[in-house]
Length: 134
Image (cartoon, rainbow, N blue to C red):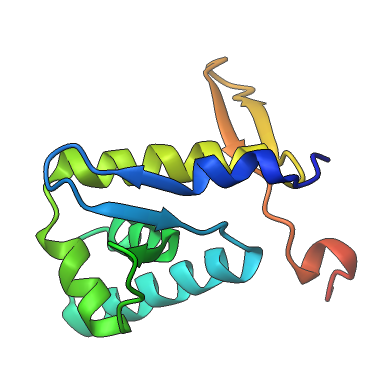
């Protein structure tokens, strides 16, 4: 467990390499991660298109302000949709670094028993973790 202190304030602001927009990031909470999954499923049901909307909703969830302004949800989604991929990757990388600086490290190394391939994934702590329903 890593606790927050004021040295992380510098990690909250980045300037995007292509659009030069200043982005203030926010920490993702477990609720944010659940909302991303919910929105992703709902969007896939509505559009019937095999697109992973997780990238869009993850990027949106990391942005607190753009050039010092809080955007309404529709404006924020349109802003993210118009970003070049280099800017999106910058936001995602900075958000990942920020989220790993504070809180519980939930990264888990998992090795396949069949082929031996090893992946790093996150261990999701949901209500099931504290009180399984079955």
